[in-house]
Length: 419
Ligand code: NCD
Ligand code: ZN
Image (tube, rainbow, N blue to C red):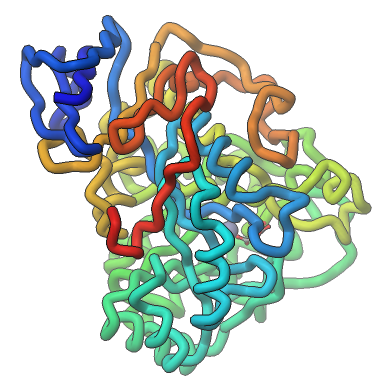
């Protein structure tokens, strides 16, 4: 056995003392006692499957002053995430095979964590060409950073049918563009007025009417949407910012994000619904913009907040406060993304890729932007409680030690057949 990790393991929804045996990057045994060449004794600390973030914007190529795969994937590791799915609003947009291939070439050997790429297109032929290499299809029903848009029912229907035929998972930015206003905005309240919850409700209802079974709704902001989506057989992704921040958070343009932060009551209702297990996945929608970008006038400054690094640690602190069950967090952040995107990760089980994260539940710290690894250098969660991982193992390799990234850029593309 190359490596044995011993401690309180998350197995079948509970913590149990035991050992994980790892060989050639895979979990080969889970037993009470195991011997190995190298042993990590985690003691009373807890050992979880590492998380997978199904929604990040790592900005490469084209916007690498905001982030790149080196800094973004280091931030992911710092937050206990070993697999990320990158969105297609890079420059040029990932909307055809040649661009996707070039993006893959650029990012090869630059990532500390495993990754996959979403593509975007309203042309079925192009999706067909990209399908074998793409983690999923992203449809933008509302305009956001990057001016990609497909808000036409016929076109969406055509793309959903094609994606189903090709077994390509679909994620949708569900805000109906026809219901978004572009009035001058100076505050989070104005931004919310421009992008009302009705735009989200309407987009989700239209998808339901199109029979979008199996489709994933990104960054759901309202508890009601979790119910509408579940009824229509759609899955739902939630982001920490919509559960922990609202229009009264003193963030100014740093809190400008699409879909927008909502009213405090809506935020709390969403948080409660998620704690009750109503959301399918957690996704950070990590959308880094530089402090200079965010210092622009509210109306013209770009939308988006960073989050890949803080998503799991914030939720671990929520688990510690008994706000949310650990099993719900692990299901949303580890098991479900892996299952949905067919990556053999997310559970501590024989045959799975050996991606583990070790947490000390006693080590509650406060988030400081200056200590994060994202290139953007700030966080909307400054001063909030978090529990960061102490050790992260990816494919049996130690990628984070003593809370700091330490490994190599061994990240692989989940679609290139090597995983
Ligand atoms: C994202 C970005 O900056 O790329 N911005 C955001 O407000 N969430 C795009 C997106 O996911 O909408
Ligand atoms: Zn996004």
